[in-house]
Length: 406
Ligand code: CTP
Image 1 (cartoon, rainbow, N blue to C red):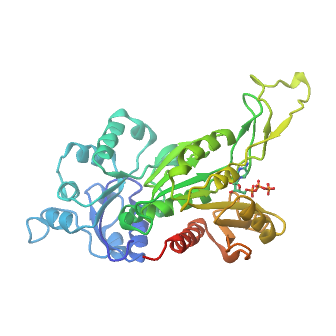
Image 2 (cartoon, helix red, strand yellow; image 1 turned 180 degrees about the vertical axis):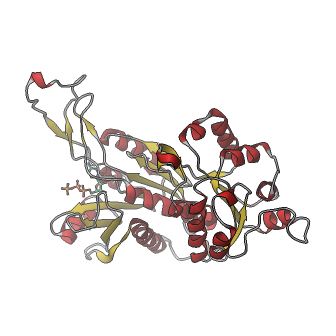
């Protein structure tokens, strides 16, 4: 979606300005034409030459530099998208108030193109009611906000406010520009993360799922234009275009999936659902002096099998299979038993694969015609976004096969 797009990249004066260089490089690599605009504050943090070298044109900083008296309207009208990364509290306030004090704020007012804003600042500033009110105002006007992430901040502090990772920013831009993508108009429901089943007030039965693969599928679906509902047990940065339904237990996930899946065009069950849960969680905390507790377990409902049994015509249902034994035989069994269209099987005992890794290697098994074996495609070890692309490519192909010829 990025190839050939003209993107004005506004950089404001925060320590994260150095990451804008990486964002620019990634956008250019993806085929976009990047027009860089820096504020006076940004020039305290990075040099014009660096950003100019990694964008598509020299940096502009002022309303008064060139012969044209109206660079802002030229930039604003000619853009397919305006991206501000990082955006300081000052920029958010000026933009929310409609205040045009420099080239960037003028460009932001002189455009009808979609705008993506990536705030970055110290936690106290990010959480300040004034900043949050400005964010809410911008959101209500349709500005896309890429929320900051938690992590190390300038001066050694740790907390929320760190600029989103360049790959997340580029994915958000891609998602916004992908409005007319191949999943446009479709509703995709994705589950992500491992469920947690309470033992008592403080303890749970959990598993090693990080949720990263599900989030990658959700982000990729949104980038292809889908409306995405993400039923999640984890708190990762929310991909642009996705609505999160937070859940914790298998029972809550089942309720959320059963509420959203019936109307969905595509359902991807990438969550690692606990297979067993305590029959009843103890009230309060089980104390050591009560002796070693005997925890009686029961089976959880198989959410995916339920979705398969109730699958509406035309819906594509995708499951995952985490295996340690005979990958294809086990996954094919699940594909058939749970009445799926596609199963994404991974051998979680292989290095770099599955739980908690940023990479994955999978075998995609597609349901064959009755009596025919499942068709298998393997995807060698790669990043989870690339796996998500392969999964959604297969979904698109399955949908094509379902559509009766015109
Ligand atoms: N799943 C589910 N509800 C459960 C267990 C699993 O919806 N209670 C879904 C998972 O989200 C996944 C698929 O079923 O998409 C396969 O999960 P997996 O754990 O690999 O298989 P199980 O059916 O649990 O079988 P086993 O544990 O015997 O391998």
